[in-house]
Amino acid sequence: MKKIYILLFLFLSVQIVHAQEKISHENCKLNKVKTSSNINLTKSNVGKNIDIKYSRFQFDIDPTKLYIKGSNTIYFEAKESLSSFTLDFYSTLRADSVVYKNKKITTSHTKHVLKINLSNTINTNTLDSVIIYYQGVPYDEESTGGFNSGFHRTTPIVFTLSEPYGAREWMPCKQDLDDKIDSIDVFVKTQATYRAASNGILVSEKTDGLKKIYHWKHRYPIATYLIAIAVTNYVFYSDYAKVSATDSVEILNYLYPETFDDIKATLSVTKGLVSYFSNLLIAYPFAKEKYGHAQFGWGGGMEHQTMSFMGAWNFAIIAHELAHQWFGNHITCGSWKDIWLNEGFATYMESIAYEHFYGQESFMTDVLANYATALQEPHGSVYVDDTTNIDRIFSGRLSYAKGGSVLHVLRMQLGDEIFFNAIKSYLQDPKMSGGYAKTEGLKQHFETLSGKNLDNFFNSWIYGKGFPSYYLNWSQNENNKMTFELFQTQSDASVSFYELKVPVRLYSDKHDTIVYLDHKSSGQIFNVQLNFRPSVIQLDPYNNILKGQSIVGFIPFQRIAENILIAPNPIDDFCRIYLRNNFNFKQIQIYSIEGQLLKEYPSGYYSNFIELNLSWLSKGSYIVKLATDSYSYSEKIIKK
Image 1: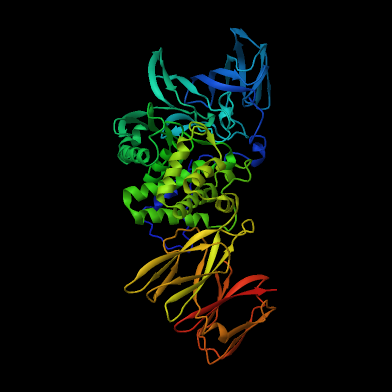
Image 2: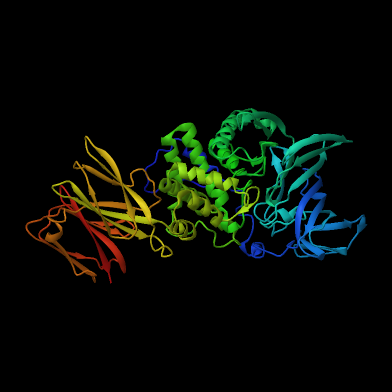
């Protein structure tokens, strides 16, 4: 799901042709719950002794009221010998009765857990069922907004949004990430002036007095948080998209009457996106049923299985929610710690969609927009370290922008063929297809297809925090032999070093080449033989790497290094620079180790002895950069 964030481009110079579209990101799960109320939501033993095979939901919904009345018929398989089991069930709801073998049975409801006491013991692997009849107001000060009522203009609407912890607020269920329901039926009874949207295929709509009953059928495994209903005065239309040479899928759209025409025109891109993603990845995973959109009352979108609920309409968010049908729905993160498997992929698929439909420049604009967001702060991991905090789970900077950026870095390191073949392999893995996955499961596919050990990459970029910055020294002798000295610093101490292939572009009026420095340690020296003298040297010219600052300094080692001395180093409050053999520098700059310019001394030619008062610097590492008209020299200093 996408979160509203403003694009801050920081130091990156980016063309923002379509960047405004990214303002509408998923905000649906944020600012709805206190952190403390979520402490017991991340993992529980609720329902651990049963495997839910099928659910039949029957709801009686009046969109003018924040109230739910319904039932859930659950077919379950016993995972062990049992005489009772538990379900997640919000405390503001009440179970009127639970029926087992046509008789009412006893229950207890403590806090948000419903315990069901069967009238007999059933054996392991036995299939059985219960019917839970319930009703109530699905809201209090602790609720996450799983069930919502409101208005569009003057018309009432009810809709659900259960991710991550809201399913229990409107139905008895198992809302943990370990048990997909194999199949569901959803019946919604409401006033005849309204329509109900849900997962799967609309099987029937039947008149019942002044009301109608809508029956939706879904026959794919589904995580509980992806089950959804929305009820209002929808108008609808269908489109169709090719998902293979012989198969098409219906794209069914439920929209408000007052915005129907404008949104219908915007949604015309959907069929092209469905076809493209089906060709690039695997065929649309729910092709036997549908894909579609239902308009609802939040500002972003939510990727409910086979029917995304949408409050914003632009190319980026349409692509993002569609991508979730592969990444999040077909394969769902097996823990909220691994939410980047949903959101990082959906974010990067936006960029890939721009690449295909609008070209390389638009693609890089989107990539750099994600970079800029990811680089706003120097700390934080893609892997979620606090699942009690909904804001942290759905961090736009980390789970979305950095997650998507890391996928771009990995693609650039491995190449397109390996990258996309590994993703296809992941989506088709029988252990995860239609089920759940964690980061290590994805990693195995990239390692198998590339033949590389990716421990450092995943430990640094997914589990570690922050990002690298680079400092490149270079020289070239009379035989055109290039010598590079490449330094790396890390913005967070959790990562000791990012092992990466670092591209360096070398070009002149008649030549242009890229060399890749296989960087395994800071200060590593590389020698490259050229047949020309480059006039420009660029480190990572095409932004293959998510990084902070990168500085390139020219060091003619045989001429300058022996004619300059910075001492003492480490320094106290004063740094002395000695210049021999009439070398004169006209500019002096002090940089942070991350590459931020801290101080620039007035331009002008300096004598062969300079003393800088650096008492204003705190303890740490810095870069002193000296420049003449034709070259520059940089050196790392340490302030004690």
